[in-house]
Figure 1: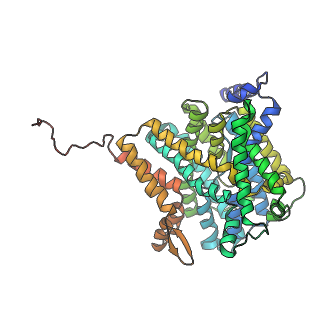
Figure 2 (figure 1 turned 30 degrees about the horizontal axis):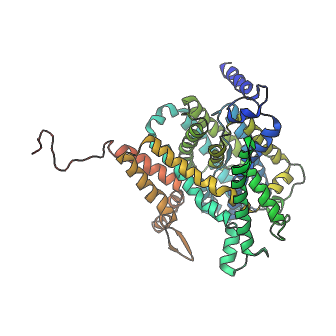
Figure 3 (figure 1 turned 180 degrees about the vertical axis):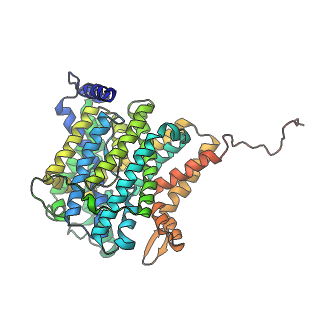
Length: 497
């Protein structure tokens, strides 16, 4: 009864009125729909591509792209992004956060689906992946239940470095999108052509037009509407793209053409639980990833509270967010969705425009749920060129790394924290961008080392800089002494001469 009474208070605080645009900068209370919808849409546009891209990559690798499994996973991802966000707004952290598919699990999911018995057996790979996700999500729930105790082991410097790591991990993605996307870049490098019939400089122009539109709108627009710079930038960039023949191909770029078409109306489907496989090694690997994303969730929850609400999150907000994070992932796996995370992209939006209203983000979550039942809506959003997304994301992605640095600065640039940060960046992030030849391609140095040692499962884990930086910063935060000052010339009890 206490739970439902608390839930009732949370819902009432979200919808109580009267509606006012000034409430955009308040955590609770209603906002007029004419304000709430565009600001909520801004959050959807910022995370939409990232929410579905991991699914497309994994299903391409395991050979199921175009199959019904891919369709159901896609719809499940959209549905759980919306539902998971609503759960966080009502029950979990109750902070302005948005849930979406995590990239952290990508290398491990690909390894699980392309090795051992799963190799050349796509359906077996799919059910093994789903089984490992279900197990890992249940582990995350149990793990989060004891946050009150193990959370004391996580020193403040660790989540701050993890947030910075998230920002650093997104830099390459933002730069690639700004330059047209990985496919366009690869085509230009290999053949000198984009492969779409559109000159490459057009993609660069579109990206710059999008970025400049965002900046000009935020500089010259007055009132709360100036904070809609991302939506305006995407709109302007999209309209410019429509004026360039061949840049937007509604047939080849639509999701229905990529993963199959199920008509105008469809809905998420449950996974066949009788076929789900639980294998020891995949379950362990996914569970390790969940530990990393749980700490990432702590960092993101702390960051959104500090940047948007100018305060530290409460124990209830962090603990509630973590538990609901595990529940969202476990329920999502039943719908074929991949593990989710609290999106840093949307935290970047909060940091820029200070719009923290839960009702506003609730409207965006509802749009995601609607998109999961009406594939044409998702199809339309997917036609937005990567150059347009890149034009809006470069500042957001960069700001996440800067927010992490700011958090470290607020903790204090002690000798110990400087050393932890330096080593975490150089080893945790540096080894993932340093490349060496491996076969016909260049791969990250850390990946190559473990492949040589026949420890490919570790190579996939440690190719993620967020996980690396978490492990390194956590160990160093306990190993290094609090005071790094060492006197070489004086001993205790001696006097200066």
